[in-house]
Length: 300
Image (tube, rainbow, N blue to C red):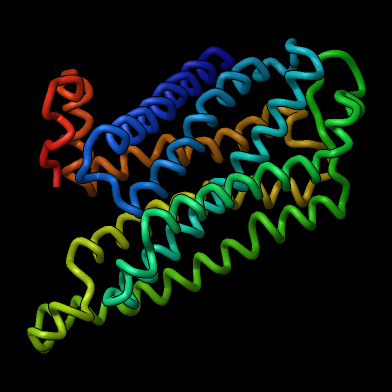
């Protein structure tokens, strides 16, 4: 059984690592993909990249033992917290980006600039690092203090820490995401109906109306966020309702794997909704990305 679990986790590990590499390479190389939305997607892809390495440690823990010592255990736990909080932060930023693009398209180019997006992403990662350091302060000061025996890798933030984590990394961001996307959905539906009935005035279409591509992007990222929430909810619910750490049992590893599964599903969602993503993968696999002039390739 453990072998089958290892195989599944390793497959997920490959997918998780492959998709961030695709996104990061493309946005660094291709000029027409350097947009505010893609910067946010790259930030999310970097989170997935770290998750790929965390999955490797998850394979080690399948037999219930940790062989890498207390320092690596703390590093594994801290990185897990950083990735979790930064992923949620990136999802909030993506929701804000889509909200402005759909609900206020006239001012979107001035409100959501590349510089502001880069600053927002930097703040998101900095806050995630500070938050994880503070909530895991005792583990960082004395690695392994919560381990009852050799071979364990556990942590304990206490009831107050669980409540803070639940509110700050789950309830508040998820509430914001849901509110923003419900608003985006209502506006997008009304705009689609207007386009189908040809009621909108031409001048209004040119200035204050979101493009079809923006609506499609909102729909795609909405699917990404929905899948993200479905994978995230069990992790927070179980970690809050049980006293022992999730890392103490094989069933806990399955819960954590469900959270990591989100990163495996994202590339499938992108491949399904975005033709440019499929073209991008082809460019990388065939090594065309290293040819001269590839930075000006038209993928859109």
